[in-house]
Image 1: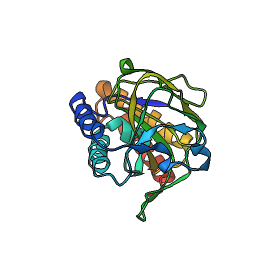
Image 2: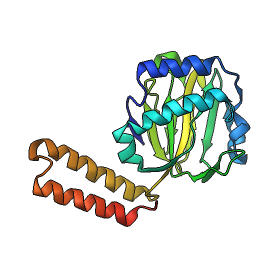
Image 3: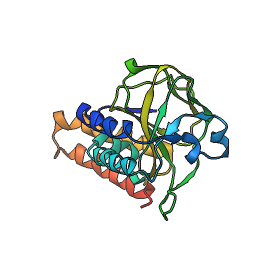
Length: 223
């Protein structure tokens, strides 16, 4: 599980919240598969909601400006962001996300390599509502921060006991479908970036490492 801080600024969070809080919400199971429907208790904006589409575009623009998201996800396609909210006693039991996500009423579909949760509530706004993926720790991030993790991971949201947890969630099809290969590329990219300030972008070793990165990406990418 990777934390990506500051995907949305505080002003952007306020803009998104003002728009979605005033919209009409429905039962969150409108997008659930059979297994998820048994475990899911929350509310959601309909996928075809004009507000969801407009605020989803705000998030997609922000993702394109996040170097860490691009480096970690190597995105080929991003499912248009959805929005959910968990009130008191709402939660989502252990489940795994569907391998293929199809946008209703369109031919848009992706293989879900990665899942993302972008928090739109601060931790002080609610109790409970932690996202737990695999053997990882319970996670609640500041509004505007995002968690990214393999969509194949069993995960859950613990019941909310106070306040309300609001978030955006979506899936990414990566150019590199293998989790280990994608992690290797991110580690190599981070190592190169850490060396640049002391060696310079045109240092022969930096150039060689950058070449290795791109040759691995060329070998593993499917785009």
